[in-house]
Image 1: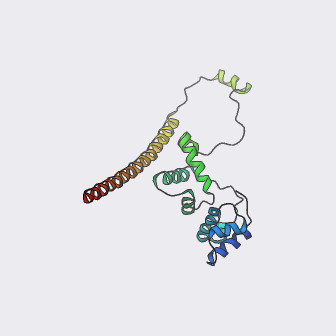
Image 2: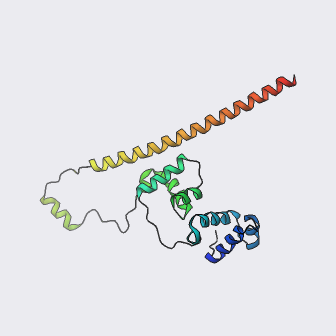
Image 3: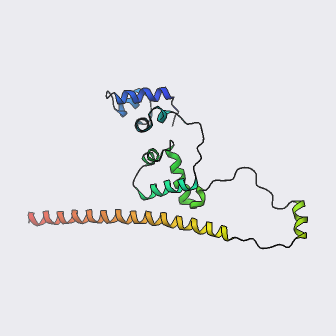
Length: 192
């Protein structure tokens, strides 16, 4: 998607809001490849005003809890990334898509903050000498184990919500098909 200036976006949004033209016409008139871009600008402008049309240059940091909450909302409700982004105050809907995809591939650990910088080497000359002087004790992994279990529980909760929603949709579809069959058989009976 091409990058457009704030002034350009605002001009198009103002023209749309004046009621003179529609998004399809404006996309053709101004050479915006997809009218959906204009619709997104309009939604963002209505929700946040001028701030909704400005490109954010700062990298927002979101907590693990916030990311999992947003992913859970997306998986359990029938909303688009754009609508969800507007409702939770994120100016970048593709970011939610990335979180959802990462979650589906790697689970909740994919949403945890990543350490930056170079990894420390495991063995260095100084530490190997000091290890020989002290008795080595096994590392208590109970904290890591609890974290792993919490992540697994969260993943299962989200999966459960997703499956419940899927089941609900299938039941609705079956009910609709049943009604269609009944109306079809009723129309056949009346025609005979």
